[in-house]
Structure formats: C-alpha cells, structure tokens
Image (tube, rainbow, N blue to C red):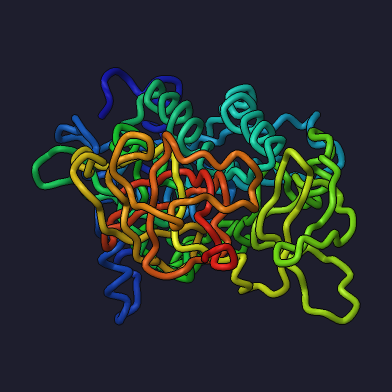
Length: 445
C-alpha cells in the first residue's frame, strides 16, 4: 500500500471492502479458460512497494463499461478499490452540444454504487484546457491534425490524475484501456504490450506515456476481448453493461466537427487544388476542416470522388486527388519529430538503423519500417529524392532537425502531427510525431 493512510477515501474503503460480491471466477462456464487466465492475472503485480498487504488502486471511471469491469476485476482479486472520475470540460463551454459529460458522470457514479466502492470526482478542467485543448487548437490553426487523446493520456490521465490518485493513498491508477504491462525480468521497468483483442488494442494512444507513468498504471481488461468484457459486465449486473463504446473526440460529443471548431477557430479560406494538374477546383470552407485521406465532397460532375492529399496553411490550398488510393496519397517514408521511447533500454539513434513495425493511424495493419540513424544536417540518413518532404504541405518542408523513417511498402494518408507508433512484436516501443510525409509516388522521378 502507498505510504500513509488511505486519505479521504479510507473510511469508505474499510467500511465497504468486506462487503464483496460473490466471486465470478468460480461461476465461469467451462471452455472459458482464456477468460479465467486473464482474470487470474494480477495486472497490478508490477507496482512498487506493495509489501505483503493488498494494493489500493484507484480506477479512472469514465462511465463506460471497460473501466467499470476494470474496477470489478480488481475488487474480485482482493484489491482495495475506489473510483476517480475526472471532470475535464466546463459545462459552460458545452452550450447545446450534448457533449455527454453529465451522462458519463452519472454512469460512473452508478457503477461505483453498484460495486460498493467510493466515488471521488476530480476537477481537472484547467489542466485539460492548458495541456490538451489549447495546444490542440493551436495546432489546428497551423493547418495540422493533432490527436488530443495522446496528450490527454500523457499530461492529464497518467499525469495529474495519477498524482491525485497517489495523494489519496492509491498504489496505482487503473483504466479500461485494452493494453497490458509486463515487468522486465531485470527489474529495469515495464514493457507496454498490445491488448489481447487486436481489434481494440489501444497501445497507439498510450505510446507517448512515460516509463515512470506506465510503472504506476494498471490495465485489468487488457487480457480480455471486448465481448468478454461486456459479458462480464452483464454477469456482474453492472448498470452500464450495454452502454455503447465512445468514439471520436470526447469534448466534441455529438456535434459536427465543423460547427464545434468554428466556435474557437476562424477558418482559413482558400481553394481546392488538383494535386495532379494544379487546376483550381473551387472554394472550400477552411483548411482546418480537412485532413489527409478525407473525402473532399467536391462536386465532380460524374467523376470519381476526390480525397485530400495535403494542405498549405500559407496559401489556403487544400490539395486533392481523384480516388482513395491515388499515387499522391502514397509515400515511402516520413520525417518525424519528438521521438519518445517507452522502455528504459530502448535503442538510441546513434546505434545504427532500427528495424521495427509501425502504425501511422489507429487500428491499421502494421507496416515494416526502418528508423534511419542520424539526423539531417548532422550526417547520416538516407540520400536522394526519397528524403524530400512532399510539396503538398507547403514551403515548410525543412529536413534539418528531423528523423527519417523508411517504409518497406508505400503507405497511405501519412498525416502531419499524428503519431507514428513503433512496435517490436507485441511490445510498443514508443512513438514519434509526423512532421511531413516523404515525397508521394506522384512526385517521384
């Protein structure tokens, strides 16, 4: 147990801890060996300084079924458990948005009440605005496409919220992420592993979280498939067992993205431009509303659909090409920045090229790649046309100060400011942020 008492939730834990429900381990039907094994796995065993007592674990209760089952599993394993619900969005900002924050809070409270564990609400509105939302807007105004979930996990959920959990006496913070952690045999730290359910694996969103933060994280449902989680929720009588999984950006909710963004960003006007011919194809609503790989909805007069292949914040041009797999959409490499390794023994750039696999978007198939040793302007790196950034993202195509990742096969819709996440087998090594795609196949000599 963490040093000191259980804090403000201590008395509730002691009062409720002995009132556990009937164990579901013995109630599992025969043939569910994989589920039994996943539930028997102590996902918290890597936590430090546990001693011989039962660990106290805070669960980030989102109101969804995954975090609720995470709390249920931990309680059945004998842990002292309390729920933490973080408030990250001011209702005054929501207006008529139907953001869903109130509904999620009520669902989280109901789950905690059903499990007979304490519910603690934490106000992180200011931290979320400063660390996630404002940087998100700033990047959009630069014509980029950031991913707020990466920043939220790094700065808020496994940053401020983890610290708050520890201040309340928790040994670790559990979430409903489909991922796993494994302590290294040499005691040097933990490895982040893909979730057992490859369709729901969420290591992509955890790839910017630090080694120190992962050491305090717990992922109880990482060894389960989504349908198994939902079945366990139903079997335990959790009131949210049928609640739909959330998707999209949390603070946008049910609003149209364009309507939401227009509240905070003045759209940059400009025209659609054909990447192949340079032809002006008419005005668009603002470059901030488009991202690479997105259908443009240009009236084509019977021609095929046009998809975004790039945009220039200086001129306001949104470059498009006909067809989802047009050569202008494909590239053989990318320039990356802000490389983040998770493991304490991760390779360094000075040790030569690193072969691994990658994802440039969530849930896409892995591709093979090579992280080229050395940076441009400092010696090393691949040579020739392959190292040029695409012209479809304007004049800011500098190579110096960035790293180059060479893909084994051409890859589509590689998008600036999205994460390029690196893997070695089931281990997530970390990630970098994409600065620019390399030359498209259309631009190659």
